Length: 85
Image (cartoon, helix red, strand yellow):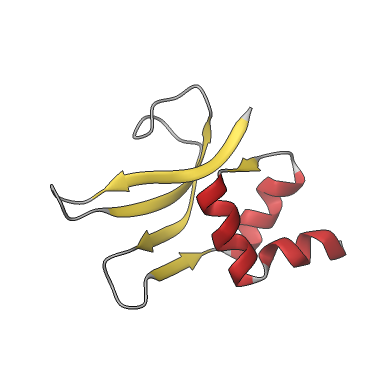
């Protein structure tokens, strides 16, 4: 099953994350299918950039978001757009 989840990047003790579509059996930082955006929790407020069209495309074909990504998509309004279609 495909998951939309966070992939950790950045230096030691300075995390930043990429929002990716990956098979749920892959390692957290392993292979991924598509890159949707990024998330930086160290800025104030945290920076969230997600390509909405790509996210909607993957959600329509059955990719399931992780809990953290689902909250990000809910805040940005992407999940509401998915329900409208």
